[in-house]
Length: 156
Image (cartoon, rainbow, N blue to C red; front, side, top):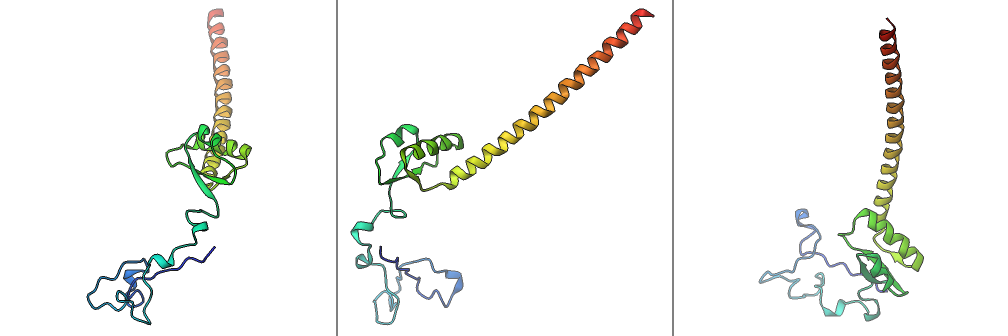
């Protein structure tokens, strides 16, 4: 694969506030617009990638996936990108299915955050269960005391 050419904005070195983001030079007397020798190049058709490597992301052809059904249609040699509208729970399901099919997921950050969230939720559930057990035992103790106090009053 060819290295990507970085095209720089005209006078980016004179005025830092401009940044290096590409903007087409439009000045009437602009040397860069006229492609005068010694000035930076302007993006043009001759700088395009080799046709074999166009539209590849990290060397893979990609497929956008929003449901488990979509993964079934993906063939080998492709990589999967999980759609932005997919929630964390379904993203974990998609990851499992993709691993079964032997597909690579390119936006795995979404899955990592989903795993962290599911771990956090599991921890909170465990803590909640412990707290509920403690509350149950305390309420049972209070009820026993109330019963014993009630029995003492009846005997008097």
